[in-house]
Picture 1 (cartoon, one colour):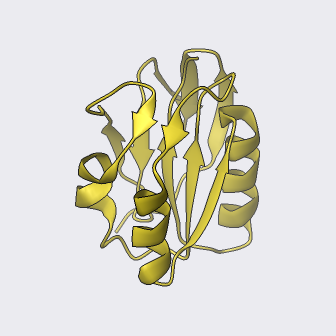
Picture 2: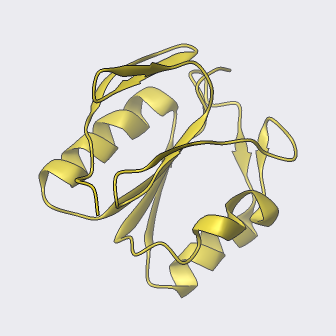
Picture 3: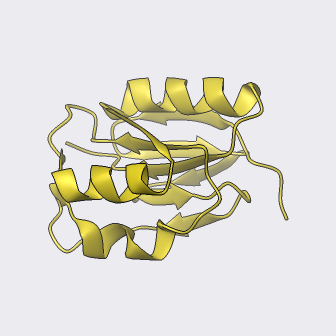
Length: 118
């Protein structure tokens, strides 16, 4: 198991994690894996987009909805995580990165789903 990384930097269209730059949406798992993330619809988050991550051993899922917050999150996505006892935090990506770093620094297991643009 890897150590959960902190986010070094985020700005429109770019995120730096452990010194590595990504220019596409990513998922960061509680085990520290960084995975390319694609959705069925770019500005909508729905169950098929998160199905592979629902069983992650997370205390909290942090969802970054984009620089301007244009990605919408379906209610059933929120409920699917909450049914598993996972807290859900949704905000524009800059605030989501701050929340993720704060939670990880506090020793929480966090699943990050982040949209980098819009």
